[in-house]
Amino acid sequence: MVVGANSKIEFFGLPKGNEMVTSANLEGEQEVLALINEERIRLGMTPLEWDEDLARAARYHAYDLATQDYFDHQSYDRSGGKLVEVGGTFDRIKKFYSASFVNSENIAAGNESPKATYEQWFNSPGHYDNMFNKSSKKVGLGVFYDENSSYGSYWVFCTAH
Image 1 (spheres, rainbow, N blue to C red):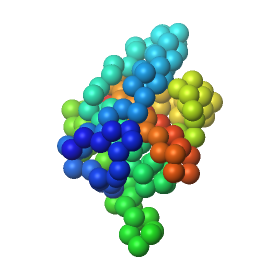
Image 2 (cartoon, rainbow, N blue to C red; image 1 turned 90 degrees about the vertical axis):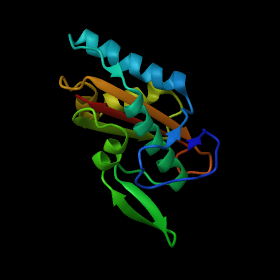
Image 3 (tube, rainbow, N blue to C red; image 1 turned 120 degrees about the horizontal axis):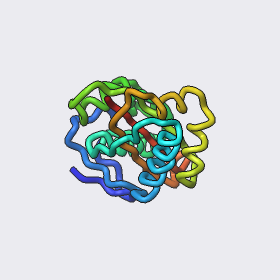
Image 4 (cartoon, helix red, strand yellow; image 1 turned 30 degrees about the vertical axis):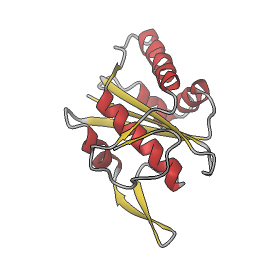
């Protein structure tokens, strides 16, 4: 199943791993990656390599955050108007990516530009550590917009060894 940036909700919660959310801002995803890799190189680190499965996991979570209108690393469904947790961060990511150990996830909301998202993560110690973890080799990013959600834009970053 493929869902575009302006599609109505067709799935939510813990994925099966075959869901395909198209990028709402492919250039923005690549711009965030370029900013991260520029700093990794400046620090003497290996640049992160794009992984499409991690990107699918990131895009799925950005979609879920926007369409279900929540902001959390865990995955939720709505039941009777309330959020019910259905799975953890790595449970969700591993549905899409099973090649190696999943390292981390950053999420951001409300940022209108890739640079603002990068700077938010850069200035947060935990998010910074995730972006510049020496053991991280692979990365995927996802962006989804929903004007009817609390924050409008949702950005997700996932890494693996």
